[in-house]
Length: 550
Image (cartoon, rainbow, N blue to C red; front, side, top):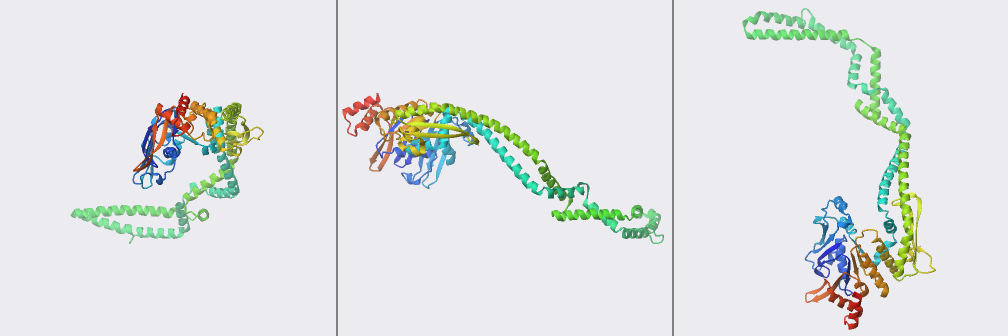
């Protein structure tokens, strides 16, 4: 419920603070006194866009703050999703700065207008004649019938399953599209895979192959050079080994002359050992060299295939070729296994559809079940509101297609007078008729769900007498389940309120301002008497006012 409202520097309001009671609150005042200003200020804390021209004093900021009791509205999940501090008594503040910038806060946490608007829609329903067009919208009509049918939890479950169904259908379509595209390239990709697999790339080392090929290609030249190297090492007269041996013998005789000669002898001994090892290794290489034309051909062929594939796939290495091979294998596999994957996906979709159909059937049955009683209740209330011949025709037709809230197409038709054909509400109902129908519907809904605070803005325009009293009774009954505000010019409606607030305008040397005050019992008598007979209150008007209040 709306517990309090504070407005500062807004339109004709200097500063206003008022607390509201639960139940049925009446707001009255002369035309132009500022009732619309009050609604405008309230709309700002509900997320309406700000207008700099609304600042009374252009040099100061405008502040509007409201306090709401929200314990009964199941809003904790909303607060968690928006990362807001939840409090049963929640404060919403809106500031409009002289610069034109606007700021919004929920429990002192800055929020966007979108967040404010979504929260505001769950806290207050401001209902005026032009807003009755909501009644003609299909979404609202479904909301009404599902509230009466108690379908909300079923629909939530249905929508969860529908989300899975939609996701699976999307996945199936992707599989079908991938299969179609892959099929076009399947033969070519298969050829490429076989071409790559034939080389057994994971067993090859390009550098080793190139090294082996170079050696076999130049085997005679290598043999010749190795033979020459052996001659240099082993020639009796001038070979390296002979010369170093002579050096060793010389220093062997001199090592007794000092440590320096001994060290040289040891180093020469090490060189001789190393030369001997080199000789043995070169000899082994020479003996191991053989010409092998067939192996040379094999190496050449393998390397040519590798080079050709590298050029074909525009890469430079076996690792990259293997990566391409794996990707092509995946594409080929998708095509080869697509039918099985598609079949599995189709079975999953069919299984989900069975559950969806079951839920949609339950939703349909509960809707169809409550239509007669909803129609009866609507016609009864509308009759009491001065439309005795009004009739409704409501139907739900079960379709094959899965819709966002079931499989029903809802038709909500209306006839205001005897002998007139039924037609869609938006085509045949006048503004005044829509206003009364909306009041009837909100009255019925208040018995089935926790509605937010509702504010009726002159919904009783154009009615009087017994119809006005009946409207007031309906709003009074609604206030047993929710907080109801009514801005009215009718004394019959005003007399039914639990709390009576008056908007009035004051003029001083400094200017004109609007104010709001709560009326005590005697002030209520005077106010209603003035609504009955004008400013000059007669004794009969006072008596009539007291009668209405009693």
